[in-house]
Length: 233
Length: 224
Image (tube, rainbow over all chains, first blue to last red; front, side):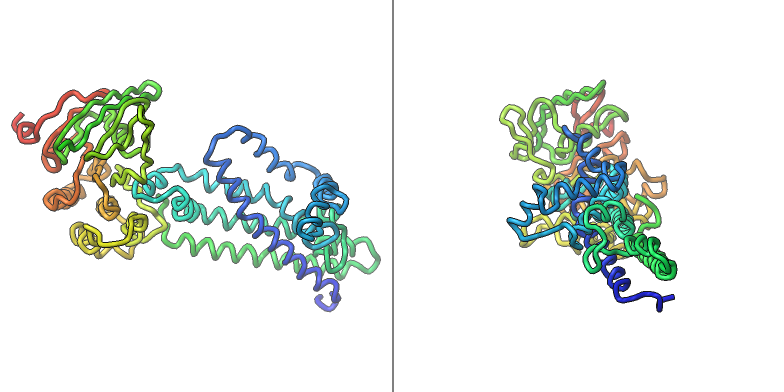
């Protein structure tokens, strides 16, 4: 099966892993912060934040991609700003594909992580405060470690979503070999041409293999995390 | 010297705490039926709840003064609160639970050595274990040790025996006796059981429906 894959296909596989890895890891801190705010605080504009975060989940991906193009394209206001100040170009680059994947994965990550923050009821944080720990230290020594299994599943689901992202990526950064041609856009490309079935099938198989490996890894990590926690507190 | 001067109002929903207490005795029991507001008072003392009015002065240090706008956060009050439900950190070993409070104290010689706390409460065999594997009595001992290790100005024990079955109670009582004899820090014990009052306090403060209804020395409490 592998013989049906050419240089561009291997490039697409590598690029997919890079885009999905960067997208999920880079958005993780933001997803943690957003999930924490939504789970533990009540504030003005919370509803708005919630809606904004979930928007990419309910919008057609093409719309999200188009909005990204309008905002972050070379002519878009944010795109021009990024290029002027930091020399970063997103449109038709792998970085743009990573941004699209991150935005599409974000709501799923926030939802997953939020659940694990909601499980804690603040009692252990109270205990930590009475022992003298400052609030930031409490977050990093108590709240975050206790939400670790949620973070791992959030990261996995973000990676998986980013790996499979198609609509927004295609619209925003197209399907350019070496830049924005991922496994997903390659498969789509192959289905559009004659004799494309074999490489499409091979790439589909690789896609399944990556997903299985990611699932097994997260399962192993979860077991390791829970090794001391036979009973929940 | 005044040990504790407390005059606070705290209202929440139907519950109304209006508490006035002035005492020189650094070993108190807050005694009253459940629902009398003892735990609310403990939370107010520890800074976990903020009263609407009043002041709290512990050993000359103002913890709270509504008029002066003083409200020390829990971490600055340094009140070693031993919660009814222990609240050990499940992801840390017993040893790291014990050391948790020490991390936030200024470095330097400490009045309470780790080894002394471990000896006092017989924690040596538990050090490498994790809280979910501890029995109720063991967990309570670790919680007391953890509070002591944070070098508290005051140890606040909230119903230290309530979560334990009868056999475990006797076990913990022995340790509480030791703790009392060691007289390491001032103590306030919240309880609705006479035996705990006699064991842990020199003065008993009666609490009923959110009010202080009187104080009495433990000696006369025994006979009365």
